[in-house]
Image (tube, rainbow, N blue to C red):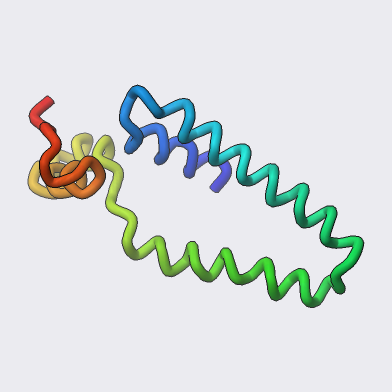
Length: 98
């Protein structure tokens, strides 16, 4: 997942904010690890495990709403799905002709 998520972000993000989005993903991951190490001094490990399961559960539900990668759809020649994915990611008014 540490490899796939930045690649997916780089594929779907507009060119002018691609680096910022990828950087923010890494920053949030490392901040979360630091927070866990800090809170581990004060919270029981069982409570910590239950609290850590909550973001995983939310992300698991969110996976059902993430569109396919437009680059992958173009690779497998799924033109209609590619158009729908780009419109969903860029907005209904975006120019996706390029």
